[in-house]
Each structure stands twice: as structure tokens, then as C-alpha cells.
Image (cartoon, rainbow, N blue to C red; front, side, top):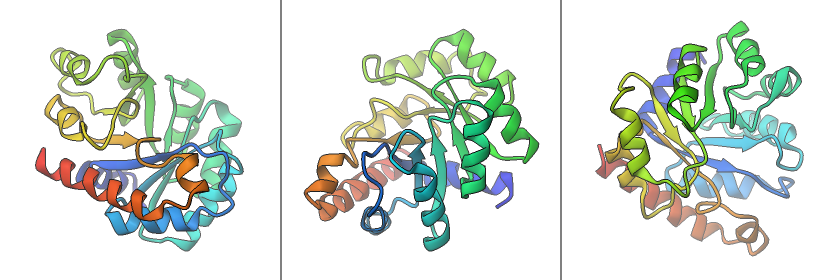
Length: 212
């Protein structure tokens, strides 16, 4: 996919799953549950078990899914993620090596930041989105404050977002949100709570639409 197409899809769909999992051997039922619930963008963090293999399988077997890699740090990790089929790269920090690798192949990036200085540096370094992290102790009010001096930055919180507060993040100025364990947890997978994952995904998508 062309870079602009990936950016526009993230902006249009507004919500994606962030999967940080101890087991990815049976990731297909998770993806299917998310798709049934309306979530079609999935980030697999590279500190998940067999993350690159999971990214490859999703990109190959689920053409409707836009799959990305998270917790990408350094040249080697970025390169492996791209080779595995990731269509966007996410980092918890502004990793210049990751950004350089992505820029070489014209790939979409979300560099991590928390402070105003870090957010501006991430944006100036060419990150397409700025991931606000960690946000669980700060909330949408912090994002609203950041939007004041930086209306041009595409902020994407991926921590502290739940099925209940999705709309609040958009009202505060997020262009998209990533939802992690409140959507999919290792316990859900062990218990095969796929219908529960589907219902959470549906609620997230509904709340994202309401906030438009």
C-alpha cells in the first residue's frame, strides 16, 4: 500500500488493536473476532512471542487487515518488521534509527513522545503520527493541553484507552487511538473469550464513530 493510503486508512478507521501477547501461535481466532467487531487495523508489538511470524501470517492470510509492528526499536527490529509484512511502525520513543529505516522505504511511522519537547522532536523528525505514551495516569485532558500549541501534530494515544473512554480521547483531539489489554488480553486468549473480544471491538468502533 502507498504511504498516503495507509495514513488515510488510519485516519478514516480511527481505532486499532494493540496486541502484546505471550502466545501468538493461534492468533487467527483473535483476528477474526476483531474483524467481526469492526476493527481492521492491528498492531503486533515486537515483544510479543514470535511477533514477526504473527505479522507475516496476518498480512498473508487476512488481506482486509492493515497490520503494523509496535515496540520497534533500532535498525534490526525495523527491518525485520518490514520484511515480515508490517505496513506501519510504532515505537514507544522517538527512535531516529527506526524512523530512518522507515523513511528509506516510505513507510508510515508513529514515534513515541510524552512531553511537548518530545512530541515536537518526533514530528520534526518526520513521524507521520505521534504516539502519546504512557497516558494511563494523565488522561484526555493532557492530550487536550498538547493540542493547544501543536494543532498540526497527529496525536495517537495508545495507553490508557479503554472501551469506555474512546470518545473522550477523540473529543480531546486524538486523530486515532490504539487499544491494548482492555480489548485483548492474554487471559482472554487462554479462556477463548473471542465473543467478548468481538463485542469490545464493536463498542470501540461505535464510540469512535459517535465522536466524529
